[in-house]
Length: 393
Image 1 (cartoon, rainbow, N blue to C red):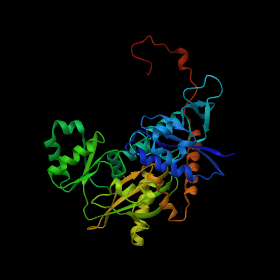
Image 2 (cartoon, rainbow, N blue to C red):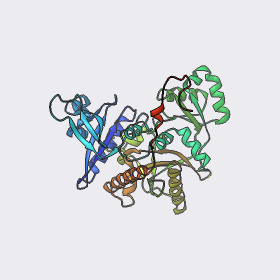
Image 3 (cartoon, helix red, strand yellow):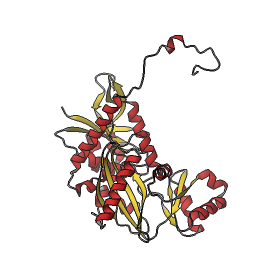
Image 4 (cartoon, helix red, strand yellow):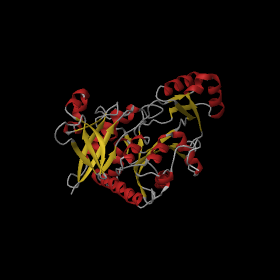
């Protein structure tokens, strides 16, 4: 019997469109002899739709028309199985559209990749591929991620964080603190976004103010760190879990400016972004010495496991050419295109990568079922709400 995999993509995120591309790439790459993939599109209003039309990228040129041809659904957990129920429910007949054995999130950005969708899936007791709730939240918060990595002696750049209310109350004081701690040039970015969205480099106070105000349009918290100007960016993906993980080939993205932009990642390949990260400009494999390649790959695995990663994540590194020092820049818990091209470079086909991720999801479910989550108690037999101090004691 085939495993029914619900492939989730889209969502309330500035990276919505990229997620659609990544999600449909994965949906089309599943081995149909082993799996029955079910495409599930999450609108920008967080509504769920499925159906044959949802699985065709051409239909996303006109999303209102796509939704008319699709079925809106909601979740129902019935006897331990996750069902997709038609909304509105039929007055007569069966409203079950599909049943899911494993959820497969391919979502990017805040509100979906950051543990929100993962918590939703966990609530319904469905096994899901990729990082768990806590790991997703930690990896998507750049400041928390840096704190965890620093505590484990993994090299990261020092940073300053700032929230929008703090900045509004004292713009001058905020800039003074950044200049004292970080100096120039500085790079400003939203704390919880990926895909190079909302990022600017500042070389003086005027540019710093502009960069902060720009970053705050994408979120209430920003992070500022030293900008390495003589920079190489190297990316490496990791597949596995806490017990065993392996590193992919390394790539060097080619940027058109001081920083790798959204356009460099998704548009510059010449096909309007229709193939996601596959068409981004890069050197693959990266031109590294064998020693530096192995240093980065080992550091990628260590970073992934320290953050309790699962499935596939991509770790982005920075090399300061002046010192040859390697720093972890960020980790993408659900990378664009699931970084499948980095595994193809080592001879692992995309379908095999997806198979590995499903197996890791099922392994985690088996392990979690062995953990005690409840026990019999007679506490409710004697409980009453008449006391003013509650019953916790």
